[in-house]
Length: 148
Picture 1: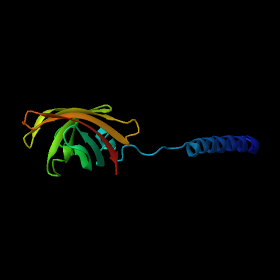
Picture 2: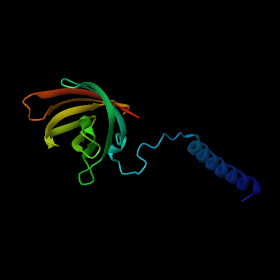
Picture 3: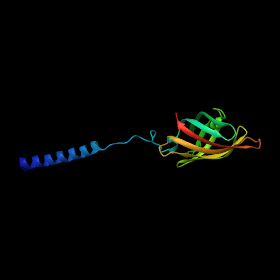
Picture 4: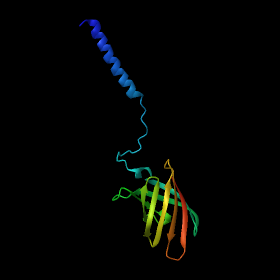
């Protein structure tokens, strides 16, 4: 083999390596959506939210609600201080796509049920729910949650 063919082979190999390196370094990598790499959709809504609530009985009010993961069920979330019932009071919801379903449950002698719709960018959640405290008058409530 002459030195010219060795030089051509070396040039082709280097050109190939450089092409691959340029291709890899030119790719843009997006923001990591799931930092703990467990593909848990609840990660998108776990946060502290400001609830602006409109109650048929109590009128408008604002307060904080914490959303966390239910540790024993990967489809459920825990809403602390929902309906302004207190930070130690938990309402459970089931996450299904962009919906949070609140199945009928009794919390602090209040029967609560409803649904929340999550915005596509996860910036707000719009809830509609009903609360029955046993007085004979059900409270129909709408609330918008915004991240703090």
